[in-house]
Length: 356
Image 1: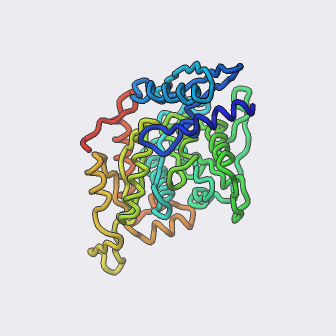
Image 2: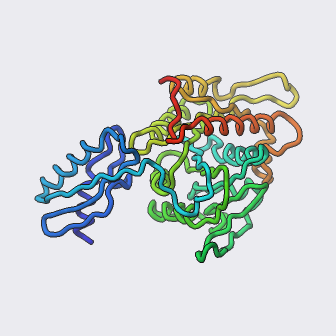
Image 3: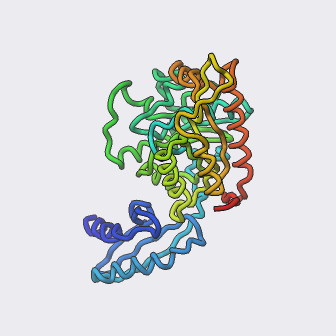
């Protein structure tokens, strides 16, 4: 085992071109074995047309040769379609992402889930924000505890169902208010278990509310499930948009190859109740629209700052269910645009770009 670890450490010096992630952390180095000087391994790629497949193979061979090893490297290609059996009944898996915290990503994810249910879709929601799970509270389910069910001779975790949405979150398995202090691999394993052991049944959409930024959780998700697409949430602020660009680049990098369905701008403007005709752009105006145009991506929605959205999250009833005001219509429109963006994906999963 120590010898295998040494080989992995050696290959971890090789980054996937154009990224700061090495091929070991990306999960590309698989089935490593060693016998004498000879090392055999698999180098895995998401797409069969990956332009860096042969160059990376050569770099691995050179690195091993420099260490006095003979390399037998097999290239394997999954084309991003591998999914665990628990997701056999799930048509589409969509990640909800943000480059930084505090932009309202979980609020968007929960209201989008409810909006899609309202539109007639079957929806599940995974709270993958391992270190700051907020989805249970947003659905009024913080005190719920999932239970086990037997499915085809195997035990599965039955998601908590609220407002027509099937939900699993690490928040269901830890004490409220306690700090989740885990190393990266522990957090990644928790996410894998929720996805692979959940009894999801038949769903049109499984939304995955990711933690902010780019981390091991994002890599684990890509390795665990074939994502159909990602939605990036930002505010109009320059610093938030700069971080959103990093998220877009991560998903669109050749190593990950997940199409970005579009951008949602949260906290777009503020309208006081006493001045319903006024809009105050507290964090700037049109930032996400400009970014979307620059990257050839759809602007899926602009969500205003509304007291009802905050209150809905705190009361456990997402604002998309409100019976008054403009908020329900805004989230329903977001749901329709997301559904249309997903429907535009070809069978191979890649959306045609409109520009760069």
